[in-house]
Length: 614
Image (cartoon, rainbow, N blue to C red; front, side):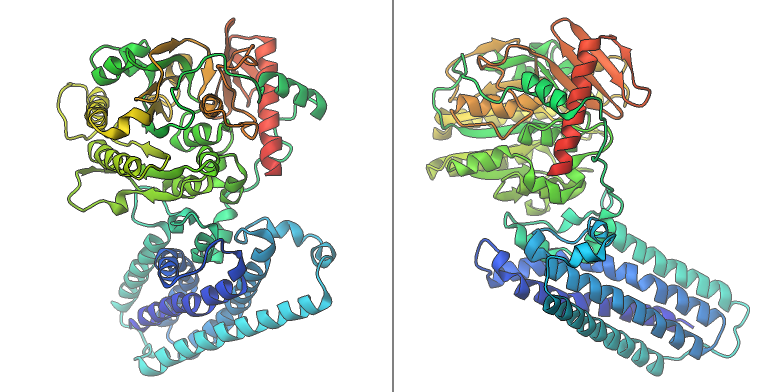
């Protein structure tokens, strides 16, 4: 009665084995010259271990039909029906898998990214799709497709045939109690497949769950092409032709005036042009939690005390409302989007500017650290794409590390960050360490108890941990050349639509460490996206690639404004006021001002035009 479960399990294992034995070696051999480094045994093992999860997901999709067909044929006995059904299914799937693997392997040499839904645009014109290749190439492609499809079909038939021959097949009749038993068995099997596809983490799996290396080829080698294709179908192109308000030339002229990419800093904040840098991206750290930035007393006393000896930017506005958007604002100097998040479009990420990548070009070692799961919201993919050589996450922490729902607590991670900084400083290698915190995220479960309000107490804990790390670094040789940047990823999400969006978007930005030339308070109106250009300007590094990031200390920054983008809307603040604009109803909901509305519309048009090209 349960033979169909065994057949489904065998089919699932066969699919995983096929991808491991056939697809991955073929991809690696054909595209071996795409790797930027020699491929070692350790690299190969890492590819297989990290890529297994995407192979399991695709195998689970492919096993759904054998599971359902087996259950139906068990409930309605007849061995022949199942054999015929599986034969037809295997033929269809073999053709599809063979075509997918052949196309992914062949196209990667030209595209340098895994096959995704963009391939369907080329299929609208078969003549155009084949115009740039020879007839021999097309014949070779079809031949390989046939071989791969045939191998998959033969193996699937063999597995199904062996199972049906050696297992007790359905009886010619079904007892009354057999029907609910079969239904329950099928439901359990379907549940297991669903869990394999979704994953058991807080958020569902996405393709970046396999990403592990700064070498993009290794990540692409690990990623199952079927999974990338299926996932990309849910992330349709949301850029082309969106938010068109001006002709191209007028929009470009407006953007050039708003976002100058050159200029000379009029103030020197650093004692050195090549400081070691620790960028602390503090979860939900709105200015309301720091007295030094106009917020409440006693929540973050360490930050408030540090502010007196630091450089504080008191008028910084968060680029958006979510971590995935905030990371791109900070590292790429790139504004958020009101209808989507660019971090979901993994093949576009390497084309964005990257602060870590720019610093790496100037000799920096780059590390990203986070106590949680970096596959959530494609963070590992983005960190690697924007130039981080090495990732340190929850998976690298001992099981004894103090943890909460989201991962390892900030105190432990800040100790690890201090270890990393001291080690790299001793090696006399300039470095960028990005540390993304997590403890000040709901449910605010922290190993600390000073304030009665749970949210306030969680920020107080991260503040306390930051203070301990700073005190430790001050006592080490690493401090003298260290620049510590403390900034939020976004404001505090007490509600998705806070009553005062301007107050919500106000975030702290502080520069401290032995590398600063002295304390300063800078009240210039600015956006979170301006950090990249401002920092690079202080270091004397060209930042023209960061087209939406402004050096707020440069002589070209003569028309200050701050930009905050949220779902279906934007907020622009200039010295004369604030405008909040709803893109769905196409009107201002607060601060109706024609100039600011035109600025916001031009920015959205330029963002979507630029992303469509990347």
